[in-house]
Image 1: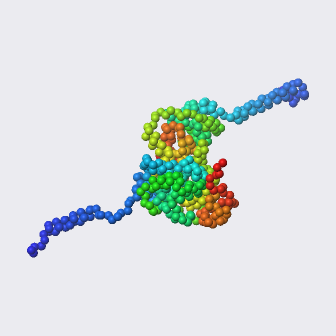
Image 2: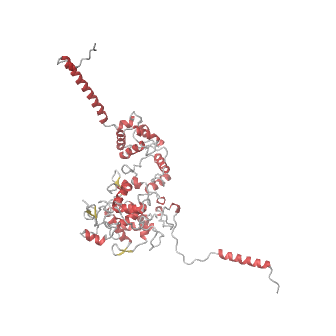
Image 3: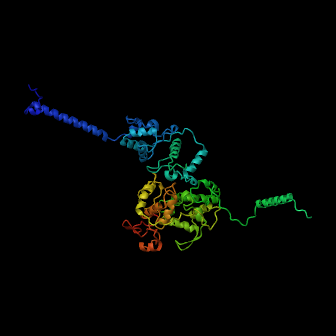
Amino acid sequence: MARPRQLRSADVPYSPQRRICRMRDAIQWAAFSLLAMILSMNSAVAIDGKELAAKGNGNGAHPCAACHGTQGEGRPDAAYPRLAGLDAGYLLRQLNDFANGHRASETMHSIARALAPDERQAAAAFYGKLAAPMAPQPKKPSDETIAKGMVVATRGDWSKGLPACAQCHGPSGQGVGASFPKLAGQSAEYIVKDLRLGRKAKEPMTRSI
Amino acid sequence: MNRPVPFQTWAAGILFLLLAGLIGYLLPHAGGGSKPALPVPANASGEKDADAKASFVPAAEDAIPNDGFGEMVRLGAAIFTDTQKNAPDFVGNSLQCANCHIDRGRLANSAPLWAAYVAYPAYRDKNGHVNTFQERLQGCFRYSMNGKAPPDGDKVLVALESYAFFLAKGAPTGTDLPGRGYPKLKQPASMDYERGHQIYAQKCALCHGDAGQGQTSADGTTVFPPVWGPRSFNWGAGMSSIANAAGFIKANMPLSQGNTLSEQEAWDVATYIDSQERPQDPRFTGSVTETRKKYHDSPTSMYGQSVKGAVLGQNSPLAGPPAKD
């Protein structure tokens, strides 16, 4: 004996039952569409850079503020650099370079990779707009150190082929565009660490310092 | 006496003569009027130049005296480093002297001031008469700075001359010192605009911009100078000659990476840069053809030549500082 097959709306001539079946279909379609809309809406909404900085993205990227300070001022004692007020294009490029290994950093490599491209942009844009006071330096440099530093910063040492930092980073270290970051207000510890890394890697810029 | 001289006597005699000779050889000989030696660089090991000749080392900036003269020298150094701020009346573009005279006019092979100072007064083909050092400086403002020549004896000129004099201390006058000007490169068989374009994009645009416009920091300060366009040197400037630009670039560019480009690359990129438009030659007669004939009649000048469908000099912005509102 043939198993009774399931009743389909098409089997039933126009009737209250057919209307209910059609309504069910319609409601199902509507529900799916709404869900699809909501899902796609979610990714089109702009990522909040401030949220990202404070909370991370819950996907492997820790809150930036944990190391870079609640105001992006950095943590000089750990040589974590200041981010506030640096050029957004520069910051984005650093995140991309950390992610693809072009710039070496074990810490930042995994964090940058965990950030989606639009998250990186949001974070960079957020910090680019921040104005933050300079973080207190752990040790106050001597007058002699500052004087020597000023010579290198403003005149360089051309007997070694070393240009003044100011020639690329601006007369007051304010930075130029996305390639030459702001140095003024950056922690000395971080600058020293980066210069040393550069010298080891035989970066053309830092080989003479 | 008929006895032969004993052996001991011979030996003593020869020994004595040898000793006398040795003493004579070791005695310092009186020199005739020897030329004063040029100061030797303090750290010759730092010399990047393969040239074995010692090059003149200018006086250190902290040797500027603390008196009236020293004040003028400091003013000259300030004008040289930040011409925009310290000689604004005479500047018509976005350049600083130190952009093309690297290390504040101290660096050999970057047209250092100390080598120029001792070479003047001199006859110049450029204007067909003997120029004093101050007149030479006036030319810098008129052409390279696309501005106005400061009048004779102006404080700006006195300051710059004082600074140059200070840097040149001890250098022999009337001498063509090693490191003067830019290196003179041998003109190659071909000077290629397209190759130059590629080199520019790879090595120069990062600082000087895709359109040669230079680069400013966010607060508007020009940090990397424009190398063509309305805010760069004008057609009368020495740098608009491909030969000069090639020499400068070869020895000094990219900044801090001098002597990394080949000579051919330097010529090519100089060709590219000097084939772009820039402010008019202040000596413009009203006709590009005539101006070329009078002042730019050379294979190393693109003035008056057609490049990419346009004649250079035909559409140049006016020479000189923009009109004040």
